Amino acid sequence: MTLLSAIGMDIFAQDFEVDEIYYIYNEGPSGSSVSVSGSNHFDDEYQVNLSISKAVTYNGKTYYVTSIGDYAFFDCSSLTSITIPESVTSIGSSTFNGCTELNSVIIPNDVETISVKAFYNTNLKSVSMGTGVLSIGKDVFGYDDKSSGSQPVKVTWLTNTPPTGYQNAVGEMNYVANDQYALYNKTVYPFLSSVFEVDGVKYVPVSPSERTCDVIDCAYDKSLPTVNIGETVVNKGISLHVRQVHDYACYGHPDIQTLTISHQGNIGNYAFQGCTNLKSESVLRSLWEM
Image (cartoon, rainbow, N blue to C red; front, side):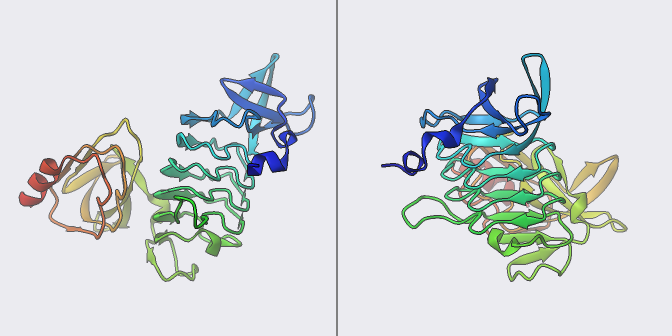
């Protein structure tokens, strides 16, 4: 008997479906908001790239999507990416438990609670924790001994004040804005809230007066197979000098095919390890030219 069978079919009660995503009313049929619900078919129905809308219209009425329900994406092992809208304020228990192909997730700023085992048994490489997160449940990023899951590689904490239970969501590398986070494996960037992305590469300002920045992460997006890191990068019309490529910057990116690095700074440990589709000749050429 599977876990979901033991829980029962009614956990995936559904009121309607829009664009192949199931929803349930939060306040009854006359309410103004809905939660994303799972499929009661138990057949890995949510697959590949999925984007949840901020609002959906059904029978002529529009509903804001304010939460993702318990077990909504449970065991969707073919789900590779998820876009969560800013309207969502809570992520339920075991929501993405067993989504073993999920590489990265951005928690929007409106999310306040992330429940127990929300991302259990996944293989997340990159997590961006939004500014509004207040509490994080136990084992949110844990994994069973028998599973192929793991702790996330990188967690970017955009919350200045550590959320309750933040120790439940520790990554191999943690980027924080201050020393309030009692974490051993952390790097403090005072201007972390100003992190920006250019062509799939994520940078954080180091010194605005000196106009320097570091590469700390990348977008795990298959539509961006080429990574170019130059000596400078332009953000909002301002040119910044790239100081270094941080540890694990693009670790385990499954879709990078070519890499060009032309800046003279340090390339951190494991920055491109596990990029299985990266053509070795392009990496060697870029490193030899440095």
